[in-house]
Length: 327
Ligand code: AVI
Image 1 (cartoon, rainbow, N blue to C red):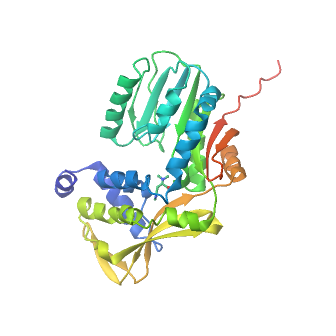
Image 2: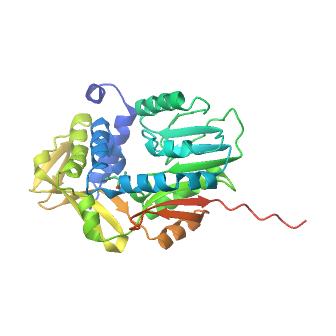
Image 3: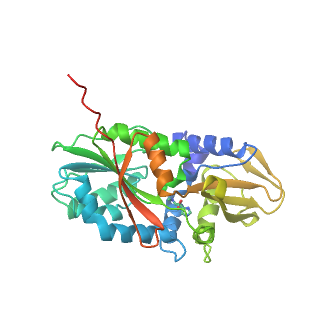
């Protein structure tokens, strides 16, 4: 389908992808936005990553949720309008939904339409009392949540998976400021945040022995070949994951093994031997560092749950109510 569209019809999604890819690859330090990892093939590979022995975040976050979901639900309170960013298959959300008191509605927000509506249907069957109101949107841009039929006492955004780490610091502050506007004073934000740890553990998590993360990274090149008439030779790019202490992040790179020229929609892109494309930043936070970032967005951290080894955290934040002015 994408290949057909890419040859003829104007396709705004293809145009955006092409413009972003060209802009990134024309920079002196080449980059590509990590949001383009997640086509059907990339999403499948990401699901595999989540089950790898080296990739601790998914199972650690699930463990924290299993142990503390009841307490999280108490913090979120009754008659809640729960909005989830990047909902995917809503696996983690079910742990919360099972424990929330009379939620007014659940609004899963995801860019992948098919997956979103399939998940919404399954949730409606399993939670017949719950209004499930899917929104197909990019949650990093402003969007209007649908009105719930039953009025809510409060709004909360749920953002699991430590995807907040894939944003730059400025991007994370902007995203959280958007959350604060969406939920309003007294509203809540429940977020998965990956914590700083031994760089060897981190580098293994992003460069696993079975090569699944390498395949996930290279799929970005394959996707450009499929959708943007590019001719990347995947065998000539190596996957690297490096911990950059000054930025407190893992960076994923595709390194050109040879000097080469690649074409992208008729544009020539030159690669020197050893030159790389940075495909992803995954920031790892300390508890205080994340609290500071949240404060810049108008959010206050109220509770933090971690696993025993403090590898990962689920954090509950609120938008403080404005103090009443004296009469
Ligand atoms: C989606 N995101 C939180 C993942 C991460 O850990 O930064 C993406 C990922 N990249 C490689 N492995 C997983």
